Length: 109
Image (cartoon, rainbow, N blue to C red; front, side, top):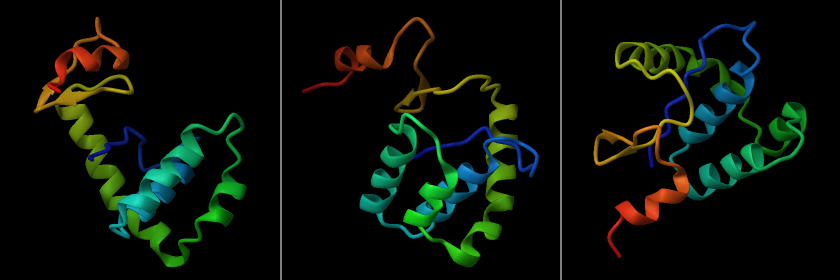
């Protein structure tokens, strides 16, 4: 699983804290914890960063994510990704005319 964020590495941006936190969690290389944290953040009706952060303490790892976040934003700009989610299948971007529900028609059983 690969997830790329479009968040700029800017303290004033509304998404920097959760992006940095999710990147820190990803750096643990534990897919189970990463999937759970993604669900906890994105499936939550109310986005409460402080509650989320208390569930996944990252300590010093948070501030080490800046260069990764800047690199992802630069990559998105370079290949002209302008919306989220942008889904790639085998390296090809899923066209806007399809939805995530349409993936079942593209994936072999």
